[in-house]
Length: 271
Image 1: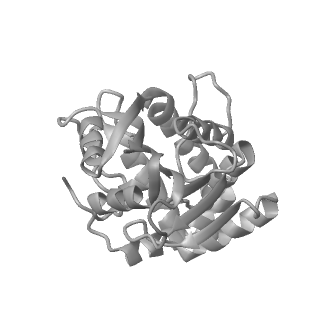
Image 2: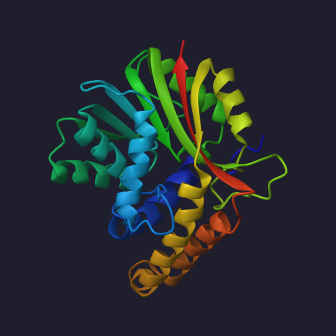
């Protein structure tokens, strides 16, 4: 299993620099979208909300329960979850820039009584044992430098019987040509490898959904098109180098077909 070569401060620095672009031009969402087919005209924001809902629905989240959003980014998914499900949400991100903007977004959205954001590292959570009713990790574990340690932390802070919902781009097989799209990312893993990791941390895997064509394939085309449409403004505001690096990362992540890459939604329960 390939470990992450970047240190947490380097990952934080990357997101401090890149998240303002997602904040302004991607509605604060930093994960992929869910489109039913090529004729689906959902916007990037609508498709991202659709995927958030599909992931969270595996949890059976109830009103008033306390959810940890591990790797919350700019807070858009956490705010969506609080508003739609009535859950209390604590979001953690390693990026101070993201945490500050996420809290401002929560205040602007009128859900600050339900949502709070913290600067934190999911490899070493500051919360006590059995603290959360549920955990969601949407495309955030590819930044884990020690995946086993992160999952053990999830297990520690989750109450007995609580669930964690996870999503990630995956390899369809060990022979897949999929590589990490960004330097700070981990190498993609197969669904079977992810199941083993969660089981090793003490979880029971209860549900797996693979939706590669609706997420990976459709997101690739739409995100690249959107980025190219905005490239002039992005370069002017954020610099040509960062704009090109983000585009190259997208290209690296999306150039393969469904025979090599899929998208996994997994739900696991703490015994």
